[in-house]
Image 1 (cartoon, one colour):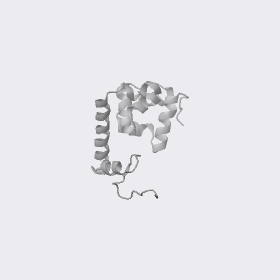
Image 2 (image 1 turned 180 degrees about the horizontal axis):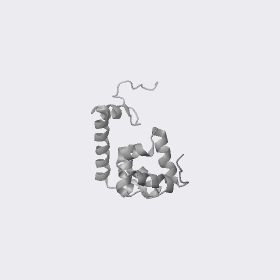
Image 3 (image 1 turned 135 degrees about the horizontal axis):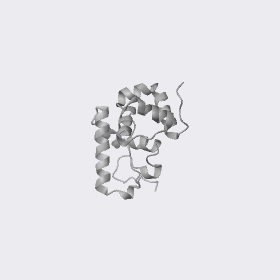
Image 4 (image 1 turned 120 degrees about the vertical axis):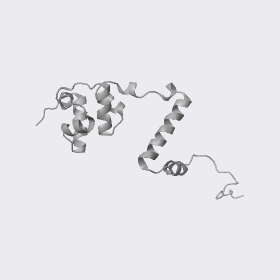
Length: 137
């Protein structure tokens, strides 16, 4: 049995592999990260480089920031910026990007419209709306 470091990064990565039924060689084949480097991550808790973290994140289909936090490269507060740090334009661009990625991933460009149309904002009904009931008078 392979030795797993008591390092949180090693435990996280080992758990990710186990959840997928993968061995370290599977991650090597899917990510292109050298097998010896993956062995160092698991056995010694060595932090990945940004490039190798990106390759592993892509192979595991998890966000890069998740890998960087798990590896201890970033802290959770560093990874989670307050929304006030972003401009409205940056937030809108991010929403557009996520919608485009979701539509491409599902192959259903109308998915977003359907999801958003099902999300009702809480607001009082007006008398002009169908279904509005007048209070007894």
